[in-house]
Image 1 (tube, rainbow, N blue to C red):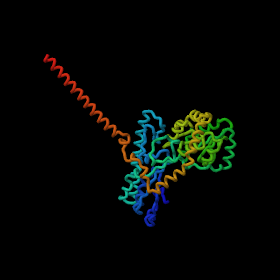
Image 2 (cartoon, one colour):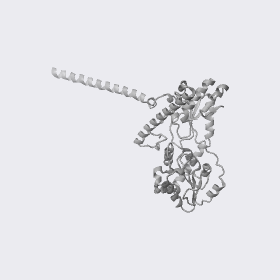
Image 3 (cartoon, one colour):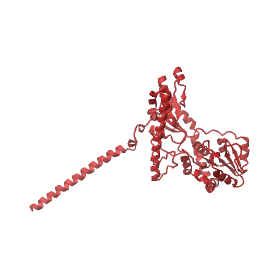
Image 4 (cartoon, rainbow, N blue to C red):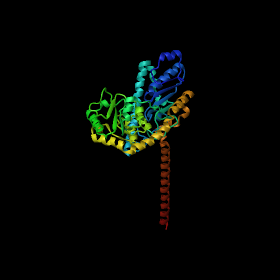
Length: 419
């Protein structure tokens, strides 16, 4: 089976050798580029290349609505606003407007940029290759599931496969293994991922963390992902800092008690998989929604970036997760459920990709809602007709009653005059 996952395709070679592709897989933000490229390559080889959208966040909001899985925005939060699926009326209104504004703005921007790419690379006539690309999908594969987001109505062409990046942890380097084994009471793991770096934290925030870690009870240690050479200025003896840490293997260690994380989905999935309660510090993007899920599932707490300048916020947040067994117990329960999903993630992903490739697409999975509007999906057309008919019938009944009353009144009036 031939497939590609990037627009950087050797165009001339495909044309010369008549290379045919069975399927194209692309991260959902690149849909206009890859869709346009599949159409271009399909013309060269006289073939149609099915397109699969792949999402590494908890929702593929472009693909889902174009594949017929409408978000019910009173119960499904956007991935940017930090709401749970239990929203107040005002949060629902904000969620509704934010979703539509974000999706429409981003979709328009991505389409325009893709048109510019094809226009500059292949000539003005190629702009049309991008038109309608968001509706040209066969399948959406999401590397998550309801455990890490919220249950919602999805059509058969939107597949939540669960995390596929989890793997058997490798053996820890000897220095890390010995240092973590030597923590009598446990280890706090502090990592803000690859985009937000600890070295970029303001001095007051670093001082607050260093102060808190220094005052931990004897027997606790801290493993800190620090992106500079050497130790953190002012770090205490119970802190081990390194520029890179094997996160899978670290979280799998039995001495890990708390994971301080930026709230990335993959980090959250790893924390759940290994049963480690979390302190989430969301900075941007989908991290707000991931940390909102952490709160909703009661497997950790949230500290907002602006609150990091407060020592008491850091102290109360970390202490809550470190010493309140409720968070640890809830995370262990969630971890058991997670293992049921994770055991079949890669197998499901392979099955669905091969299914689309084998059958040249998946129109048989496409519900008719994919070609309907919100007005039709919410049955407002039906309700409108019912409302109009009901109004007409009530008006006729009112008119008949009024006319009957007038006739009766006239009849008795005429009898009174005669008498």
